[in-house]
Length: 294
Ligand SMILES: Nc1nc2c(ncn2[C@@H]2O[C@H](COP(=O)(O)OP(=O)(O)OP(=O)(O)O)[C@@H](O)[C@H]2O)c(=O)[nH]1
Ligand SMILES: [Mg+2]
Ligand SMILES: [Zn+2]
Image 1 (spheres, rainbow, N blue to C red):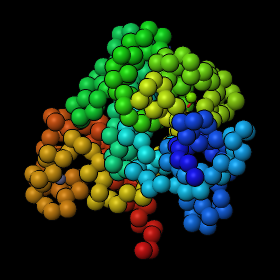
Image 2 (image 1 turned 135 degrees about the vertical axis):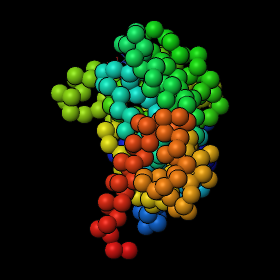
Image 3 (image 1 turned 120 degrees about the vertical axis):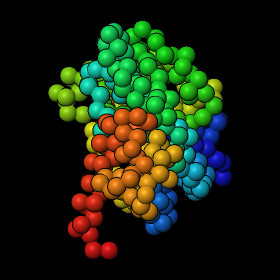
């Protein structure tokens, strides 16, 4: 048996990079029985069945350090959330959902505001400042002008990162701007809407420069946070953390309780916009739980 990392999974085949080539592998039935779905980013043991044709079988998946559901990927260190400053318009509600999910999975998070060339007046600066104030690294990038390329190289160095964000924000283009040899398919937004599908159709792991492993994945337009217990939501808003101790009541939900440390910081250390998403998410989660009988 030899070991490698799953870089792609398509049509029942898993492509495993062992460092001595990429092997096309089928999964043994044992995975189905144990209800394990191999993911991009998984470290796997394989049995080679044909060395010349580079074919084999997946034999085992090594324990995972982390995994994300959207996109489906294992063992990443950093989630990089990519939004365009324009075309398509940024949606901070969706951005905050992704931030919550990545935090819940224990992943580091960074934000890229892409296509800055489309807004030379810098209308996105308040959004950048809002996320910086909340404690995130925010890189402004343009594949057109090359702004932010060096900062991105630093961000991706010596780790496994996943790019996540809506369709058309320029995730694949961003990878190509760092390494044109990657040869990924990119597509116009209008063409995507006409065809009703994403340009990137498969999640794929690649080494874009030595030591910098990046996962490109299809964009998403919605994300569910309903599985998160309501009392845990506050943990995933990082700027809330220093002020939780100031709430008068144990189990304060920070919505309408008196003497709430979070609401005292509104418009100060905590932005109204991020807080309004916290309240929305909490309502959604509570609403969903009303109809549960467990
Ligand atoms: N003006 C401008 N256009 C860009 C930039 N980056 C990407 N684009 C364009 O935006 C469109 C979408 O880019 P993609 O890289 O395919 O977007 P994606 O996020 O990979 O989309 P999916 O694969 O569908 O999730 C393409 O027409 C790109 O040429 C940028 O920095 N500036
Ligand atoms: Mg893409
Ligand atoms: Zn409170």
